[in-house]
Length: 155
Image (cartoon, rainbow, N blue to C red):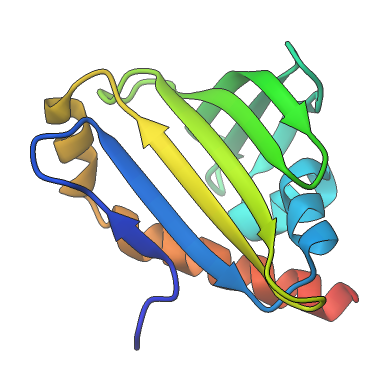
């Protein structure tokens, strides 16, 4: 199956550019990134905090069936422009990747389609390449597929 989410990782650079076109209006795509209830559904994690404003922050947490925390991520929102852009940091706790800078751009393509471009900058090429050794591309594609499916059902 072809992955709809495309990842561009140029050799020797400490960044990734992730691009995805969605069969969703721009407003609904943006909503999927800023409404806690929707984020929880497509990311499969608990939203502990989500302050969608400049200098706001967020915190996500996932636990296993026994209640053990298996994933925790947090960051600070540096720029927030409805239906256009979010600039934020992203850090996974207890992971070797360090803090990342994420620039999310939301674009309307047609009345019913939109595009998301995520430009992620890592501390080093080595840290970026370490992430790429994981099934990262498959995971983000699956998450974006879930996002589109969940939001389409709620229309």
